[in-house]
Structure formats: structure tokens, C-alpha cells
Length: 92
Image (cartoon, rainbow, N blue to C red; front, side, top):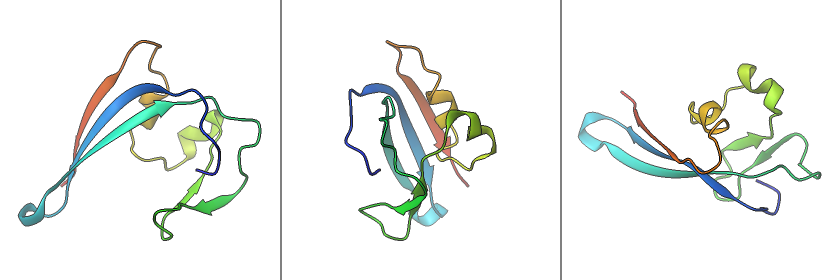
């Protein structure tokens, strides 16, 4: 994401089931809370592992209007310390 990670706190595990019926896929995502460093990159940037995917840092106040995936990210940002949430997402 363009910054060195600081202390991380696991807040959620998200299971995604997606794809056509004949080729369903299952993905496990582990999501961590990290305080944003002072030098957060500005603007849109490509991920290192998939040049076709673009990312952008979004301020908390702008999350309601932003397309942020997975959709449960907003809920994961509010997970209290010491709690880990589990979400199951089925598309299609």
C-alpha cells in the first residue's frame, strides 16, 4: 500500500465465495488495523502484485461516499480492541 507497516491488530477474517456455479472460488482474507503513518501516499497508485488494480488512501470521514472493498471494511474499522470478527460473503 505504499507505506511500511506499523503495529498491526487482527480485526477480522472475511470468507468470500464467488464465481460462476461451475467454478466457485473460496477466498480467506485476514484484515488488520494499523494506525496511518504521517507520510500516507497521496493520489491513486497500482498494487505491486496486480498492476491492473488501483488503490487510494481514503480518510475516515470520506468512507461513506467511497467504493471500498470488501464492503464490510466499514464494520472492521469499528472492531474494539481484543475482538476479531468473522464475515462470510457469498456473491452470485
